[in-house]
Picture: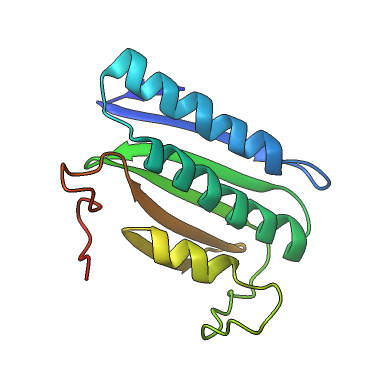
Length: 148
C-alpha cells in the first residue's frame, strides 16, 4: 500500500491460473488498513461489495484474456476505486437481466452494486473501473446513489 500525494492505493498483478482469492484478500487487507490506519469509515457492506466486485472483474479477466491482469485499488471521494486491466481488446458485453439464464450475471451484479462503472480501451487491452462507496448513510442507503 502506498500514500502518494494524499492518495491511498495498492496494486497487484495476477498471472494465469491464479489471482481470484488473492485479489479478494488484497481488498480485505487494503480496506482494513484504510480504516484502522487512515481512519476512513468502511462499512461491512462496502467490504463485502468491494470483494465481490473485484472477484467478478478478476474472474472475467482470468477467463477471457491471455496473460496477466492488473488490479489497482485507490481511495477517492469516499469510495474505493477498483481498476482491473487485462490484455484482451474485446470489450465485455453486459447482458439484459434474465432470471432464467444460468451464469453470466457478473457484470450485471457489478453494475448494480457500484456507484460508477466504466470500460476504457487502452493502447494494449482494456481497463474496467468501478467505485464502491465506503460508508452507508444512517438510513442504510448507499451514499452517492439514488435509491428507489
